[in-house]
Image 1 (tube, rainbow, N blue to C red):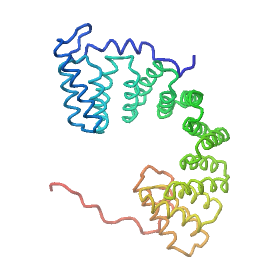
Image 2: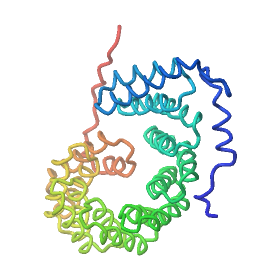
Image 3: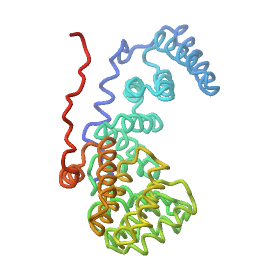
Image 4: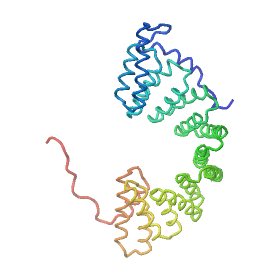
Length: 344
């Protein structure tokens, strides 16, 4: 049995053992009339939810829970409402309760895993999806999502295993192959990454970000012309894809085609004014041009200013900080202290 097929020891038992929470006593049954009213409120809540009447749906689900705290669909319904409202913490609590009450419900286990992903609680998400995969081992989507959780948690080995299993279960789905490419790239297996990206593109050529990832792997191999070809294909499919222009700018810079590099970086910065990498690239290209034309101090000033803008967007760039310190013009230190706000 593969590692990704294993359920955490005692998981189902642990889930079952928590049904006593929130007033739900194991083995107890609500008063028949209350149980009927709870089920009716749950059905009404589902009807409201289907029409996107979220507040009305939540009110009905909460009423059902008050009447029968042991009713899993009511907790699950409340969780779905909170999810659509963007309150993922409450969604997680409600869906966790639903799974505790009904550990055999596959949909609730998957929904719980998705909410934990949104909360970046990847270890919890892995446990939820492992539970779902135990319930339905041949479900490709659950296996893929389990792989993504492992990937986000930094467990690349288990992520790759899950992606391979998902590809076996759904051979025409390009996503497992695209994600396999990302794992291989992260592990430095560049040819394997390119092979996986191409497998994904064979199944669906209209994937601009897969083309960007393919180009990024080729950039690591210093195959800049081939990388630009992939980026151009990405832009043909999504003309306003800023990251494709940014990567193309880098290719042109490495090929010492500085004017072309500037043009692509400027497009990236225009399309996404918050892309720190675009401004960092602009600075690097302008400084390279200045070093070829040392008398042109304006290019140097512009380069440092671009780096300042990049650092304002993304302060954690030690290399760019070092470049600013190295190349800023003498006498540019601020001599005036900042104004402090507050009660004197």
